[in-house]
Length: 257
Figure 1 (cartoon, helix red, strand yellow):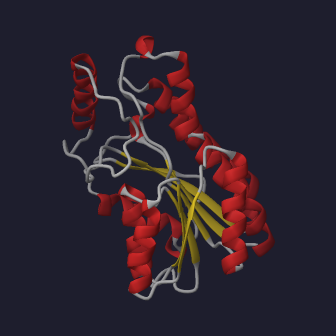
Figure 2 (cartoon, helix red, strand yellow; figure 1 turned 120 degrees about the horizontal axis):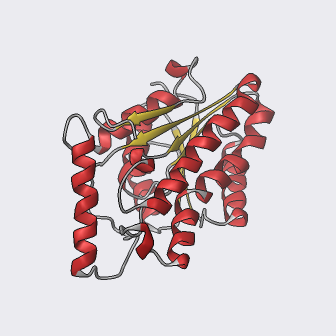
């Protein structure tokens, strides 16, 4: 029960790593603030509520500051505090060599995989400073080094940088901030796809190159599981990691990114 009495906010909670993390945190006593742009976040909240978990689910576009600020403000108004923030929103939209990205695609990749974490940290920090305590875990990626995803890599490199910099600013004020860097992770098909376009034959080849490089870079030569990612996230979020801050932990079978 590492999260008994703690309010844990998880973004991108409707599916994938976010949903798995929410379910495992609930089993460990967490009160949950679940934020996602997808309406499916309410389905997860209903399931957890039926199991006796205290949950507030909110829809918000975390790529936008105003929507982010409003969502976290509503969470604090409801629960009175936020003890843990897990910034999980992000993910590759396209997979292609950098010279084949269109400028608008590059901007969308950066906005998807950097700004929700940047805005999430900015929104929650004032509340944690008032409390004098807090833990933030950002979900980055080992794909800061990888093929066919340069804009995504740049965004996640930004996540690593802001993690270290915020830790330097605020760790002496009782706030720990760390990141996990997942490698390839097995997950069910997304209920809300990042990219609704039908891939061309060439795009399928480019994506397969990503898969091949991911498996080759892992010393275990396999994808991880959602549970393996969630366990690492929750360790860094918990008081068991009380002397760890400013760290980006690869969770990628030996791939260090």
